[in-house]
Image 1 (cartoon, rainbow, N blue to C red):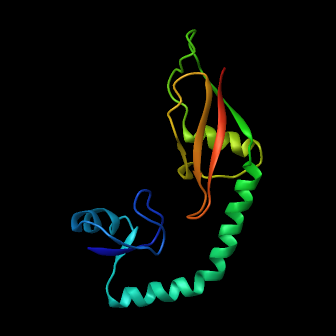
Image 2 (cartoon, rainbow, N blue to C red; image 1 turned 90 degrees about the horizontal axis):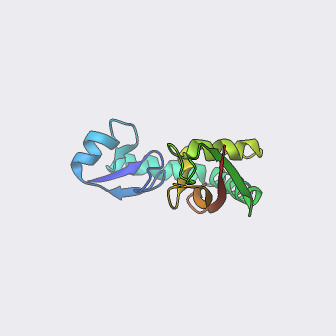
Image 3 (spheres, helix red, strand yellow; image 1 turned 30 degrees about the vertical axis):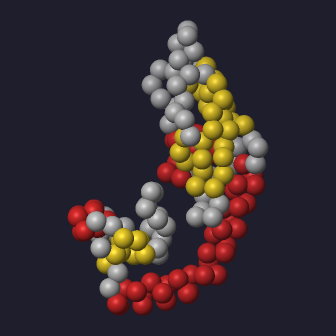
Amino acid sequence: MEVFLKDDVKGLGYKNDLVTVKPGYGRNYLMPQGLAVLADKTNKKIVAENVRQAAHKADKVKGDAQTIADQIGDMVLDVVAKVGESGKIFGRVTTLQLSDALKAKGIEVDRKRLSFDTDPTSVGEYTASADLHREVKHKIRFNVVAE
């Protein structure tokens, strides 16, 4: 089954991409959630027109994403967590905490665009990936420190 994505779907594609999915996934999840539309003749024309009209907006969005990536640069963030005597974290360090640490530095990144390369389990330095745009991805270094 071919569908056009109406929004970015992690692991599947980006907005306005034509993707092939299993019928049940498309019919029971993507379409009811408003994430995709069926790729029939009329929707193909509509998406082609939308892509044509949004081409100049896409350059601005990519530029904004590149600006955010440049602001982050080689910055190393500190994320505070409750830690036991052995250095192991109680609970978890989440992308929300990483997003808040970026916000404290004046950089606004949605937590859904962040993912950890390896899950932080103890005090130390880790990296996370920021998927800012389909063509702009950036690595963020952060330290987990004891509270």
